[in-house]
Length: 570
Image 1 (cartoon, one colour):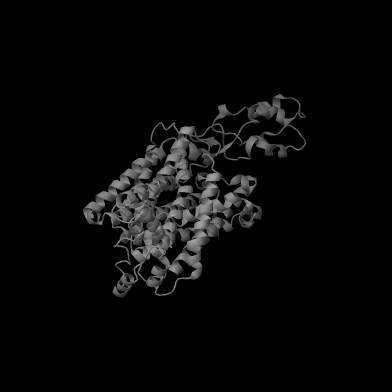
Image 2: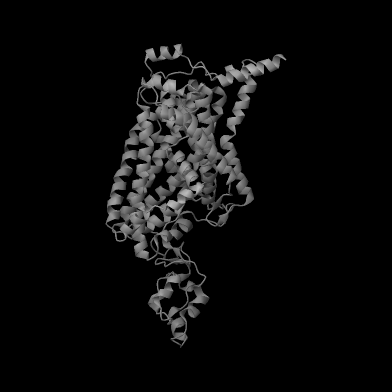
């Protein structure tokens, strides 16, 4: 639907609500949501740039424990928490040899490890339990991989609490600045310059993905990873949360309810086949994610084989997979620096591609609404630089020592419930208030709209979205990050961000009615703006036909207007 109405009208996410002016607040909500997303999303892109630069070394820095940021917990050869696997090395319950536990400690910090030779030989009793010897030292000891300590201790310099920000990390902030500079220069001329760069950012990841899949298939243990990936767990389908998470992921991955599809479609040729595009877009998106799974799980299977641990112990959620586990996997491959550089170049390309379109969404949306001022090149440049500087400054809080806490807080607050709420009111405005979308599409494509698509857009989709909103409220849970529980004040900040994303929907609705109800009837308030219609790219005969068959609002609005008028007369 978004692709079709965007192409039909040729408008951005704000001006497209000329079809139903009281719902323009939905457009503002889209831009607020996207603004918050690009702030933290570009921080993740900055992480990729940091790792990309760090890959240009003969020895990757996250593979060893001999660095200043490593702690006593650092180990290159980790065998699981509390060293439970050591028991398997001594089934006869004898005292373990030095080689059994060598390498489990950080060899570069001798003060952090007991003297193993003295410990083993001092007992004088070869039949004594090895646990009795090692328990006092590390039975409750939890190991950390070198890559884990590199990401959290060196890249993020992470603290223990969200409010322990201390200072901005200059190296990450420079990567963030570089990321925003790239956005500015790519979008310097708007969609024209973006279209040229899109050939690279869209196609290059597929080339690297194919290389990673091919290389991953040759690694030992890769088949186990692929089997783990392809083996379905049907029992998970009974969990409603799985369906909700899947819906949110689809919304986010294809930029539904963010205005991105509307913006990009507004530049299409007027008679472009939107039915085809609407089907191909989610299919290509899902197939890309499916193929990426082979690249990821083949390498994770290799990592599981090398470490001798189950694959589900290797996988981590959140940034851990991209910036902890996968870099460690790449480090164990031949030509590790090359593969690492290619992987993080792909990560940057994927992130930048999304960031370019999301940023242009904001620029186009606001420019369309203030066309007389912002269409001038000088004013446009000032406007774009201002938005980028604001985003950069807001993102600095996420490159402090507690930056990951803030990133996770914003991510969980704005992506989820606000996204679904925006989508729900968007589809209500088009399908139930305006109610003429199918006729507009038929006029644009010169063919009758499919009945199945009409039924889905008008009935099935709104019902599903309403149920998702109810589920989100009923199953509401406080925001956490792993074992870290956010303090109540931080939770409140998250709630306020969620409200900020959607408050303009009722706010603008009330404002518009209060401002116009004295001049117009309720029916007239909900009628399309005089400027609503086919885009300027539409042929003249289409423009004339639309004016002849100008859309009328549904009868429900007329009934409300009549009842209101009759009550007023009494």
